[in-house]
Image (cartoon, rainbow, N blue to C red; front, side, top):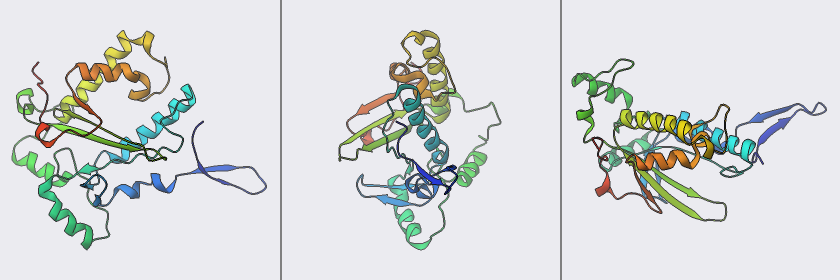
Length: 232
């Protein structure tokens, strides 16, 4: 029920050593590549190497606690989707170098470029600080998901929200409200859980009710790349 594993068994001892499947290696997310199926160019994301582990842990917890994992052979990868104006440079870089590409941050640029931009604008924040609410009115972030089963079934969905600072706070607040007010509806009542296993569909419903844009069946159109009203 925990899915397929790659392990080494020491002959004559029964000692088992788990290994990472080739399709789950971080190396798969370190290059600029073209996803021809989705028609986009993608690059390493600064969050990829953390988020993929959280999703795999969620799958494990759903298997261990509820016997209902996302999938027995689940593979989850995460990338930064490059904007059109960066594709030409990305193509050149993909051909000219075999070195891992620099991860893209939440401003659509490398962390070095992001730090230089924020410094030039006087917006370098210390721990516990962040931008003013009025400075986030035209900033958006998006998550575009595509899933394909072993038999070829496909599904897409996307979320569009405000600035990353705002959306982090949104998830934290709605997760707390879910645990406080929806506890009787939650499938699991304790443990070291991830947000999706702890909050289940109750958390998703609260996030949508709070104003996050969500589209099932396809991705949002570029004309819809704008933050929801954060002043509402």
